[in-house]
Image (cartoon, rainbow, N blue to C red; front, side, top):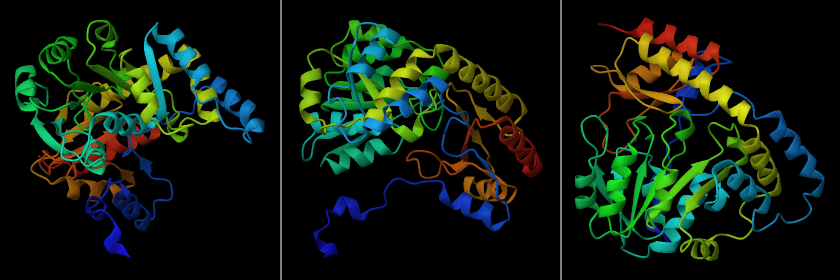
Length: 354
């Protein structure tokens, strides 16, 4: 019955860093340093854990379909914006694409970047138009608008995965002013950088800012995503969304995590400190960035060779070879627990050959 499957799903899907984990395991490492998935190594706020536990006895009921408590916490944290929520950033991305894209519609994507945009667009029947970044991996607004002309929707990730590069508010504003479609600004890692794009929501009605609780707020396992949306777009998003997308545990934990500002500030501070140490102490060149990871240029070595050697030493990192538009000599290294970070610094120094 395989012939009944849509052609797009016969292709390879999202690429996980499982091969490196297998190599580490085969080398005898029962507790490797896991620095491949951009996870937050620190547990959630105790307030979030308590809130999640408190609602579990009510799990026999459907959650609030309007995400009322979570949306209220978002407004208290960010201000009087319009918000939508879903199962992780990916759920937001899927629903946004669903509202705009139909068979054959082109969608612009600033590349190299997060591969899921292309997968989600193709799943909806659309086609991606690659908008190349500059040599330093930043985006030129004029080139972006020129290459994205004629598309309904465009994706721009900042800080970008996997490069870590962050766009200025001026760059984003110029794109919004000159692009006739909807710009989806993926800010999954923005807490680690601090650039504030929120005021742009008051100026432009073609801007959507996606965020997640998976990174700075340590809730990756609960899959809590949300987005700032224009008022005109909110009802259309809600019509396209899957019913009851955010479960009651995720809603409660997300709302409580937003209220614990001290906890997240502490985590961000630790990540920024280690990110700078990676930049200063890694013998290979590190691309300057603002995320909870760094991208390292291991040329003339290949990414796969370095990933394999590091895995054999018990350090799991991500090869960037699967990111369209990147040559095969970049690796991505997440900020982990202190012992994991020290393990990476030691291991990368051992394999460096000037």
